[in-house]
Every structure is written in C-alpha cells, then in structure tokens.
Image (tube, rainbow, N blue to C red; front, side, top):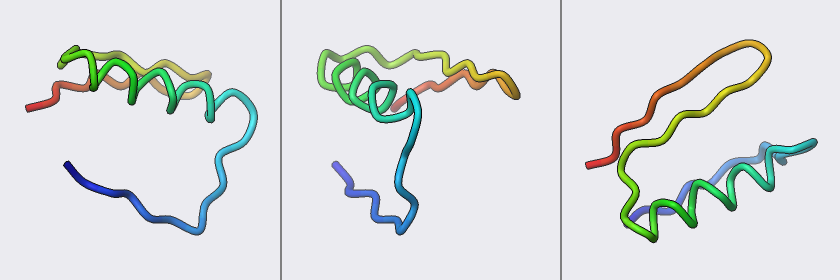
Length: 46
C-alpha cells in the first residue's frame, strides 16, 4: 500500500471520485475508468 501526500486540495466532485476509487481498490476492482470534461483515463492496478 502507499500514501499519497500533496499540498493540492481536491475540490468539486473530486473528493467523491477519490472515495469511490479507494473503495473500488479495496474491493479488488483492478480496472477503472476516470472521466472528466478534459480527459479519459483507464487505470489498471497491479
């Protein structure tokens, strides 16, 4: 496991998206898609 440290403070819908990502990781969901108005990111977690 790792800990991400940043001075950046998530805003808007990002806090909820982060919670959902963490929840999915904990459930063993290794494939996730992040979509925003500017990008689409496919994550494969090992």
